[in-house]
Length: 399
Image (cartoon, rainbow, N blue to C red; front, top):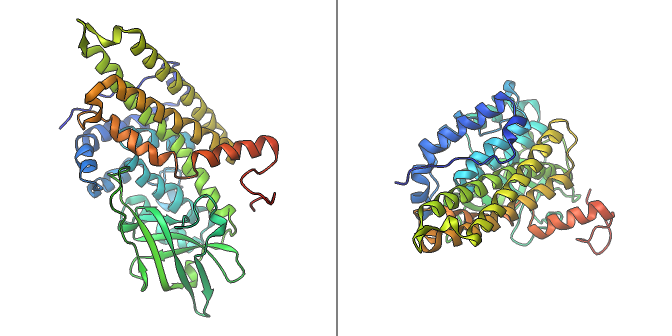
């Protein structure tokens, strides 16, 4: 069982931009991760199993819905606190961060923002405490980057809705108690519905054989004439903008989380380069090794400043979707490049489970695709600066 020797880099004294509360929250999560998750995560990743026993701890450190108001069971923290929590979780493993990110931004967030008062009181406290686990159903087998093309649908049957369809690549689905599912009504308008475990015709088969996010549980959502009570429809907002706003929250968390993965790879590479002797000297003394390390810390520092500023904007309600896309895309690419360079510094040892490098690298191959692919986020920035949507040939905008 490897010792967690992680020391966070802070080349530009970014800590001085944080409040004492921010630092306390971050350090609390970091200490919990080092004690409870780091010692077991490699074993669970090797076995392709999610460590369900960490769920109460995730709840205890505020990882489930950090920004949800206290009246609904959440800690009522700000957006930078949320980001720092995601950073510390992904520093350990992207799969652990995914579990908390989905619970927070894709399940609790839409219920909080678009749910009825009854729905908020029924679900949010149990989700915040970890008593209940949720998942988010948007992506379909044939509709990923174009969720507007979804075919999952529901019909009004008088006293209930009848839901049919399927969702794919759903984090938490095999263990979820509820699913926030996005489907089209008979007029083709997208709505969110809360589907509960145990509803007849609702199944959540697990996806096996993953080379990435192996310590996270992933599955499908299958709806075969599922009767959904009418009170389970989210009344606050409809249209594609509703699920996309949830994705904004998740992408914001990912932008922070990716920094954590990059920090872990850098920290491990820096320490290894000082300890590994070749030609009678530490490999840290070689110019090419120093080039790699210097570029790593430069990119991490740039990403830290980018996300801190984004957090300030989000706290002020000023962050745009396009700004969030830029940060998600930049930081995940940055982390993946650092993981690859760190693997080279570790040499052959870099492919073993003794170090976290390959696990981070494989995880990030998923992170660079989910919550909007790398290319789609580039096109979102392009659309924002030109006013021309390159991801559609008909020139129409998403509403």
